[in-house]
Length: 194
Image (cartoon, rainbow, N blue to C red; front, side):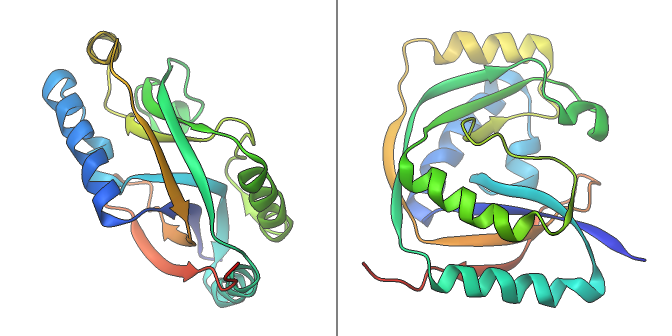
């Protein structure tokens, strides 16, 4: 058996990613935390991180492709910053438990999308479950220590981040769990044009 870890995420358009990268770089300058910059593109995790054997991968991709062909484009809203000092993944990744993120406003479109997607993903072994009302886009984590966490919170006081962005695809990505750059395996565009 050769199982690998495949999170299911939503990436965004380049202009929005560039805007987020500016904010991540500002936080890096203040906190010294680089993991978000080095390992991940800006994203929202929309599904479980799945343990998938090599011989099951094509089946999963086909199931996700079939799903995306019936999915309509929708909007999500980012609004404000959030902080976590007890990230559950810290123990598994042997890293700091602090996270700074941008909040996602949960709407019916997002909730319905994730619930439909879960019907596919629930067939597979998973590492963690996404809490359906705790969606966010991580700005700093993993190598963000307590001092940097407090500096980030202070830096973001009084700042706002409010954007609406279209969700028009999902991506299956490979996480080697070694701190490598996360590799996109496939990006599947939504097929329904409402």
